[in-house]
Image 1 (tube, rainbow, N blue to C red):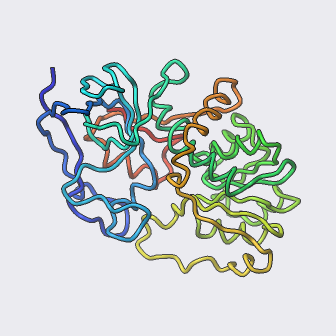
Image 2 (tube, one colour):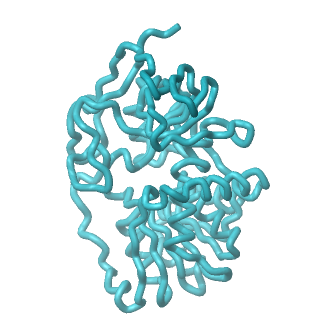
Image 3 (spheres, rainbow, N blue to C red):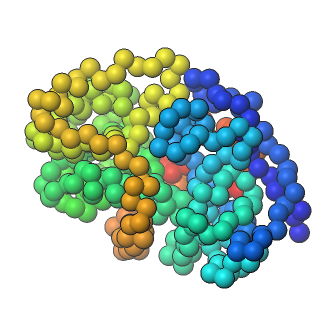
Length: 335
C-alpha cells in the first residue's frame, strides 16, 4: 500500500518559449486520507492540454494562474480508492480537475462520473472529456453550422479539431482540415472522413485552401492563429462565424506576432468572432457527454489518444510535445 503521493508542482514562472524543466518540482508528499465528505482518487491518466501553457503565466485570463508551489492544474481521470462521501463509492471512475499527481482528494465539486463500459478510461479526458465538450459547444453554439456550408478547422488532427470536423460532417457540412504534414492530412481524409485536408507546411496555404473551399468558408474553427488565421480571413464568406478556441502558434513565441493583417475582412464580410471557454456551458456538459458518447458508440465519432508513459516525472517533457506537433491525437499522460 502506497504511503506517498508523487506530484508535479509549479515553482517558477516560465519566460517566453518552451517551458524548461526547472519551472517544475517533482515531489513525494504524504498520502492523505479523505476527511468527512471527501474521497480520494487514484489517478490513471492526466490530460495534456494547450491551455496549460496559459495557466502558468501570471497574467489575466479566464481562470487564476496556478500559484507557485501548487500542484499543476489538469483534468485527470481515475478510480476512487477511499471515500467518506455519501454519493461517491470506492471503485467509481471519475474525472475532474484533479491535477498532475498520483492521487487527489476531492469533495465532489465539478467532478463527473465516467462509464468505462462505454469507453476506456483515457478517452474520458480526450474526446469524451473537456476537448470533446469544447468542440461540441464551440462548433454548435458559436459556429452554428448549417447543412451544405463549408467548415474549416485548424489543428484539425488534434484533440479538439478532430472532433469538430466529425461533428460538422454529422451536421451535413463540407469539412476541410488544416494540419501539418502529409501523414496528418491523410488521417483526416482517410480515417475521419474529412472532405479535404490542407498541409500548411507545404508552403501553398492560400492557394491550397482556395482549391479545397471553392465556395468559400462559412465557419472557421480557430485553434492556431497567426498566418493561418490571416489566410482564412481572406476566404471567409459574408456573415461567416469564427469560434476562437485557441491560438497555439503564439503560446510559446519568444516575440509576439504582429497580429492578423487581414482583420479588415471582419468588417467587410460582417464576420462574427467569439472566444470560447467550455466552462461557459458547465451546466450543459451532461448534454455534450450524452451526444458524444452516443455518436462514438454508433461508430460515427472516431477518437484517438496519444498515450505517453513515464508517470508524473514525464509531465514536463510531455507538455512540450504539444508545441512541437509530435503528438498524434489527444495527448494523454499515463500515471
